Length: 530
Image 1 (tube, one colour):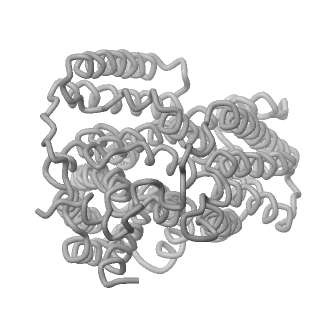
Image 2 (cartoon, rainbow, N blue to C red):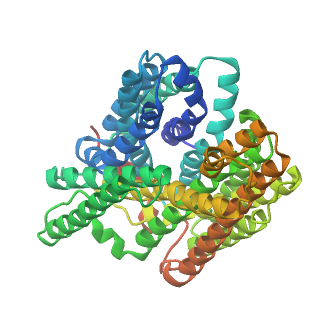
């Protein structure tokens, strides 16, 4: 490996750690909410905005951030975003009021909106097709690793330090990443600087943020809530207008914010759709499981987080195995397994793990949980990098930033819909399965129906073992329904991969036709000097 090659991989490693930190911020705050309520005198609305401010700004800024990377330079935008991420993390850690924390979380979401897509965007620019499976496995693994690690790390930090420590851990990561990206990563941008599609930026920001907020609101207040329905409708109409505007620009020969023509490619279209469906399923599962461990099994926050380690371990094995299967056995040979085969196999294994998990009961042992979570993680680790690889393989260096932002935006929407949609399903089955004692007061019955945490608290307060057993059994039934839904999604996704994803292209080799002159030649030609 040459010195130039080492620089590229070290730069990607710094980005991978940054992506991990972004993933942590999506889940780690949930555990700190009780401490924040006391320390900052935050009400329920404030607590909701601590989480939503990050998600809404992230959704709104994803597509413009990708375009800015293509226009101004991906290294330049990434460096600024990482520096902003570190500064916003410090602001969050030392916030003294609810307003300060909400504002800092919004800035944190803005920086994350640039980090996530541009970290993906540099892969087609910096690495040859033969190297890309390894790079995607590293970055894709870190993207999803942050979600289950968040509760584990957050639980440990909150047991030993003050609430600000969950944000403070981002500062050294940001410093290291800024230095690594600025020193090690070559600059790249589009040869023809894309125009600023101001109408597309405005309409997409309104559409993505309104849809995200509406879905979050529906998950909290029910899908019949008028405000949630109205906001989702505004988001859906805005996104419809956005699609119309972008297609119109494309037909006129002008560069749109989002190149929707990419979806004509089966690799990009189905790679993106399948990755979105995986995000939908995974986030729904990660929403339901911690409550099962904590309220049904009676574990504390840290122990609940540790129960997700098998998922991470299985994912790690899948990432390494998938990367090896995508690496050629000899120079010039095609990958040992096609992307389509790897995606299909991973989804089938994931479906099998979720199907096993759908047999979860109140008394399920730790060994049972380890097996099905490990199998689910293994399938995810095999399939996800191949999905991303299929989509990224269609991106040119000219529009890799905006194309990666399109992939990331779709996955972000899938994640939000997964939490709200599958969470609503779980709640509906939970309420339907409850058996309440006739003597329970109306206020107590309403509290039990509102959720498993309140249900367990009421059962302990009235000293009813019968009610406690009913609450725990009802929640487990809801969790099983959620997991069966995940099975259906995984199976249908596997069938879609078989039917719609193409196999190897004619003439595909280890590195593809672009690397006939060697990896260093492609890297040099693909990257422009600043």
